Length: 267
Image (cartoon, rainbow, N blue to C red):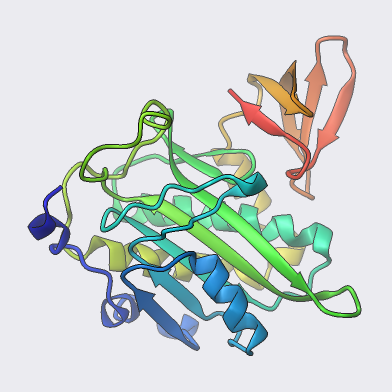
């Protein structure tokens, strides 16, 4: 993708705001070309009092992070990297609801703006045609009393392939929404994700989004490998409960509910 073609789809504050629904008006929005990490900036701003619902968006991250301390590849001018500052009334255990709601919202946004059919790999990855197009990372900061002071919802999406292609270590598992730039698309996608997420947010505690999540989760009723402490154990994914835990059945017949913090899954 050339520099001129990337300029065909520039992230701007005005462009994003023009697609935000009035009922979900943004308290604050910051848009950057390059940052270390939008989640890091959002956490710093959260400590300083950034209002609930504010977002930080960047076209490039130099230190993007995923779950379990992994690096999240965030090349320039080909994706969107957005973090939303939330001040939820949830327990720490319930913050997985934020991640799963975001997964539904990303899928709904992609479905609304494209002809693609995104699917969810439990718990926080979005796939298209068998390859990863989006990762989600929710991080929470606790108050001195141990309750949640605020949470930061980070979403990274490959909108276009990077100029020199994906790195060798992820080239077989990563994909993008489009092969060529679409005018103004990234601004529309940021806004559509925000609109969708905020439409679900007030009903998080009722778990109303869980059926929407399950209907898009492609691991259910499939053989998987549960990776824990360096050991891979064959299993079958059976169900997802209202706390977003994955019910698996092992070859010996035993069953277990897994939380997002315990395992990785390879399909």
